Image (cartoon, rainbow, N blue to C red; front, side, top):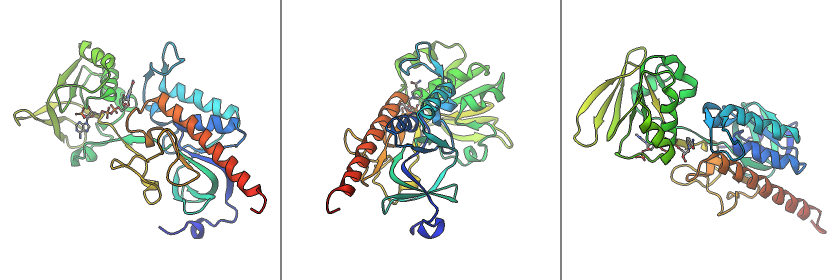
Length: 328
Ligand code: NAP
């Protein structure tokens, strides 16, 4: 990839001390701390402003919300708190980055160039899919990764959810508001979801669990009419008649943009130094789900967002001191 100098032009590019890419709990918390440090951060909100929590319903485990809170409402609280201290939150998607020189150059929506003295990457993670041809073909026509977004389209129907983590539990519980029956299809004989979520699923009269089964095809011409599943125990194949398939099998970190520049692990998560948000390029920091393959909670994302802002603030202070040192 060549330098972006030529395509966006460095003259006239907006100059910022800190740019934050992403607007989930990590990005907004980084913005709050950077704004309070008088660094006037620019947040490029990304494809899904507010991040993954804007597609969830009740958040019951974020400390401070005693009675729980709806995901979108919580993210609006995060946004307003950052704005209150001067964060500049802008819609748009960063389409290219050049991290070869500092200030770093970003291109937003393929046109506007922004120069950043420090960069905080909080691009989060996106839903994974099974990788079946018909799953792709029927996406948006009965295949979905977001029950909150699409569940209400399937009033009174039988539905399927694939996965065994907290997302699958949450999606299936939410779908009981609309569905006549929800079948959770899981490839093993035990869920990895938290105990409390599992118990709610097991206790719900509308939810049935199909253990030791994998989805091998999605059926239907114009919209989903069923899924084909194969037993991992004895290989038998059968079709389930459902109006929609909700895929909840985890997430992939949104790091495509940084492939050329930053070290990632084998699953594509950005690698940061232990107990910090430093990446292998000085002045570039990563926080939230984009660098967290283990905890992946809103509260841990917010925590690392705070760390990234403090790490960036220290970095900029040191860079300023070095610039003004005698003989610099
Ligand atoms: P996850 O915990 O990684 O679970 C993914 C599930 O999908 C696993 O059960 C996995 O099976 C299954 N799976 C993966 N690839 C598959 C494939 N190709 N075919 C079939 N099944 C497949 O992901 P998550 O549920 O999205 O949760 C991510 C993180 O967010 C977790 O830390 C979770 O605690 C958190 N979260 C929390 C809440 C909450 O607290 N309310 C809600 C949602 C998410 P195996 O078990 O066999 O590996």
